[in-house]
Image (cartoon, rainbow, N blue to C red):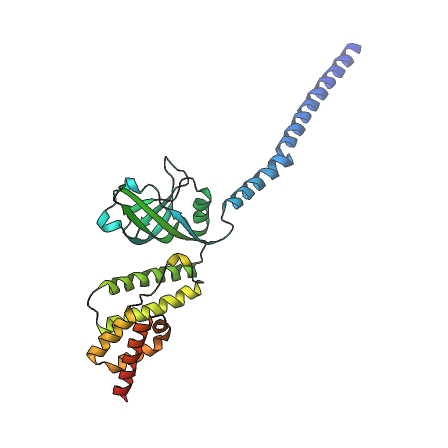
Length: 268
């Protein structure tokens, strides 16, 4: 009987110690899983790191364009100003690459290597693609391409629409101005585009990166053209553009104002 009781006590003791050992392992495992430093600090650290990678100020960022030598650029086509877009990507040379294209989808080059802040800001604010503008030039002596690009990082959709409108109007005006022969209608289209460009730039707070100015020879050319045609009513419309007339040299200002006075006498 004594032996039987002893065996029962031994069995109970073994079961107790086995159960206690499992309980301690469970507690240690649970403590490891819910450790506050591992479950809370890690995601907070990631969030703060990504926030610091975004630009602190939104605006037009200007960069030199790199890698143009490898793009087989054409002197007759690409040696000029361009409108296009920037697109984020990655390659074997740069995991934070930002590619620069013109509107014909020709790759012109890249922003300087390793610009993590630019790459992440474009991804975060513009889904990795945004309108840009700039210029390329070729140095014949060194046989090298040089270029720069303006990127409106962080602009709102409304602002980007205005940017695109300004760039298109500028391009249209430049093409029209470069033509030797211009009709009265085309001359006034140039003036109207200029007015719209000026208003849009004012709404955008006149960023210097657009490098916009109106050719001073346009007003004298229009007045001369209208005088030859004896189109006095249209000549009188130039009075609406006193700001442009006032920017002329004294010689051309005086000549233009005399033509307007002649128009007044012929209309009266």
